Image 1 (spheres, helix red, strand yellow):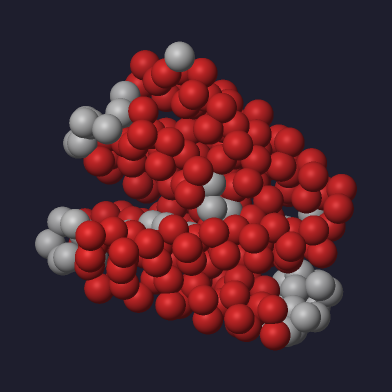
Image 2 (cartoon, one colour):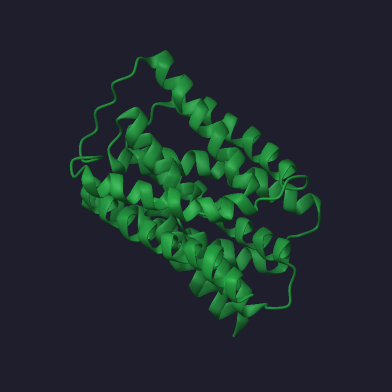
Length: 256
């Protein structure tokens, strides 16, 4: 029964994550519900052992159908990997409580901005030179890589938003780019968790398989329906993230 529940959650997480990010919003709470007495680091490691394969497969599928600016995205992925390691180290010495309270407010600002700019991300119109795009993409990779290693929730959605806002991508191209960089940040986190013994490898294969299957379905949906569909899913996922992170930051802490 545990495997069935985990596999179902991982499949749905892979589906959502492939379209616009936010799969952790589904899989992480499911793992905490299934294993309530397990150390959080182990469950986060288990989540990464699945999501790294799902995001990797989504990146591969997108790259076959969507133009990827490799000259900018590959260095950005390396920067994301480095940022992920740095963030994972930082969380061992600095408290992330301030981010827990700030995150829902930042997500709310992202949602309001996206809703106010109805044309945002509907058309793919990169406006930067090749060198400028490389610098900006690398900055996004480094900053959000650090964030993913240090804290994590909403990383995929932040990648999508910043590629749309800063680089002029439409939501479909932004989602494709986000998958590549998110694979790198997931790999950094998974490596750290594995070194510290926080990955249950006997469950990882089942979760990874289900996540990849969900990823393939989600990627196909995104490619079939285009930027407008991805934008709609983005709005839904960010709204759910606002409610979840807001509850964790303000209501749960107050009750606890």
